[in-house]
Amino acid sequence: MKTAPDMAALEKLKAAQERIREQIRTVVVGQDDVVEQLLVSILAGGHCILEGVPGLAKTLLVSTLAKSLSLDFGRIQFTPDLMPADITGTDVIYEDRQTGTREFRFIEGPIFTNLLLADEINRTPPKTQAALLQGMQEKNISAGTKHYQLPRPFFVLATQNPIEQEGTYPLPEAQLDRFLMKIIVRYPTRDEERQIYKTVTGEEQSEPAATLTGEEVLELQHLVRRVPISDFLVDYTMDLIRATRRDSEDALEFINRWVLWGAGPRGGQSLILAAKARAALYGRPEVSVEDLQAVAKAVLRHRIVLSYNAESEGQTPDTVIEKLIAETPLHQSTAGKDGQFEHILKS
Image 1 (tube, rainbow, N blue to C red):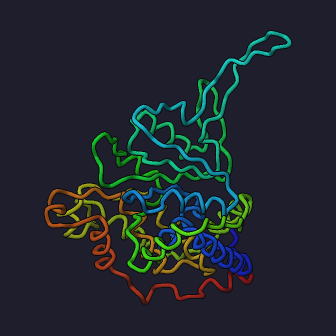
Image 2: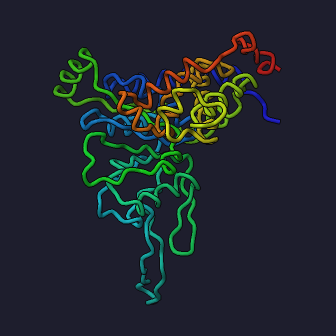
């Protein structure tokens, strides 16, 4: 039987995330929502896609996050001529100069790191994408007849440019489903942009200080798994996921009109894990409805495929998810109140 996390550990996590945010703010201006979603994804042990136009500091944000978590950071610039071995590594012939004997030795590729930035993942062919996705799913890679374990923790943060489609290889829906979240990086506000101009064009910026270690990140991932969720919220999650499926008995009328394909069971698992991570991030001892609804867009926007009708009516995955949340019944009388798990945590 799994034990619930203790309040001291949750308070420690809450304090740690506040320190991480402070370190990131010394380098990156704004993007608070993006930082929260990245932290949720890492605590839940998932990978994510960051989509945004060039120049929004996506690479800087990821590298800064890696430094504040004391994680090894690697970056791969995906291009049309990139091969799977350029990611995973390859066997090379090694000759011992003293004995003259030769043997094959495996040279690790850039995937052997803790936090990997896959820059413009949609610019490389499916064969190379598949090599990365195997590592994401299995936490190991294949080279010849051998398997090699990747370091722990291991995260992939992939970026996509939503503007240019020429010369790209969009990820199929089945591969997109491997990502816990799809995070949209938006333009800064007017005040944030003014601060960016003043900061970046001034003196050299300070380096972020390490806040956590890789071992502590692994411990926090186990902590997140122990955050309880009520049966009511499990059923509410299931209602949301099943309602996205066209022509099912649980589908809402607008879903049949706007959605071609809905989310599968992995979408529900991801929604619960992300909600647990968000609750733990703010030191709360249980998952709330607010947590589920707050992460719903990032978790589901890449798991539903819209129809032509939706696009012609100006709908987006986010607007469909907003309407889904608004129209999915939530019976507050049976919902768990804050603190319903306090007796578990204290026992």
